[in-house]
Length: 466
Image (tube, rainbow, N blue to C red; front, top):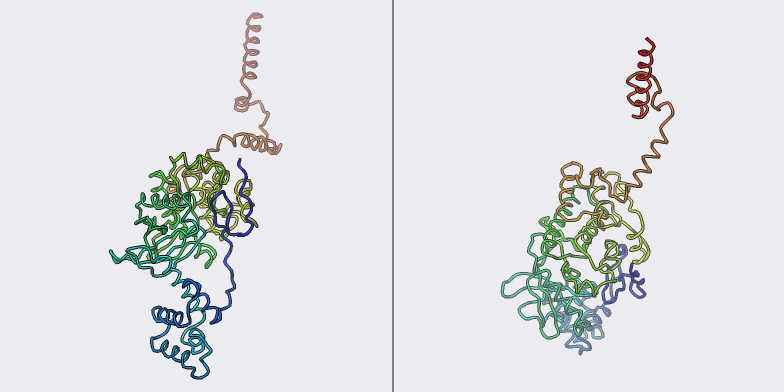
């Protein structure tokens, strides 16, 4: 087994690999940050705008953005500008942002959010054919923007490679590999890829814009799902994975944050950033010994950095996700990513219905089989998973997870259990030692033969005497 990745030293949200990071999803903070002051808002806007600007230019920029975002009317901005320039009512020493806040035309938080708009404009202004509408989110490997594709007049999402990686061929290739992988898939439960390319040193990936919430959002808000609701979602994700596996791709990062539920209730599997072709032996060997995935949901074989990673790895992660959904807790919890992964390798899984007694035995059996530590004890395909999930949803026992066939490795344990059971039989339950014919039928064969031999001998002796 390869060494586990070291604990992160500077960023607890990342697991250190050779060149990859895996988010460690901590519970969200329950306390908000204090609202920024007007001066702080002005500073972050100035930073996002690209550095130092003269007062007049910065005021004009802020005024334009405030109006475009619908935070204040043109007349309100014009009035505030007049106050800042003419010195009326002792306002000459105040900046436009301070006056806008003082007059309650906008709030400090609203001004701070303008930074995101500016960053979005800077990040996407060089992508031809698209108009950036705002930033959707950012991570270690990419920033995602909401945009409009001008030629088709449709809303899309654009993932952009950070500038710090734009000179690294390895990161560029991985970024394009994500786009190529997503482009091979066409399924209603997978976020669709539209385009991937670059404009100079701007590398981007255009995909379907999905408006909705993630499973992670729901867990944070409601703690856990009802069993039927969780089954509905996981069945759709399993269908998406079955489609991907049939086309030779493994996702390798199935988790609540990568499962989106649209406003219409359609489930979408997102983020093919770690996807890899099952047949790509060159990539597999290059990644050997490295752990790729998210610690709370990663499969044991991914932790060990095994070369042969297939559909069971995604099935394990899907099982861990389902566990989290129906219990409100991740399968294994610890203070560090490495310790969580060690538990995936070594610790016994607490059955879901032991954590949440409201669950059926069937769904617990399915999760336990999905999360079996050995690949050979796990479901082999998502088709098998779907068979059992649909049975549980119909109120039936899962035919595969519930079957009474034990793996060969467990035969020794079965023999020991049987021996213990025999030793535990009370004496009054022992077989009777009577002499009736029915009782003799329970005697061993050699005893019966001896009795018959003696009877035959006796008959012969009596005949000889007479």
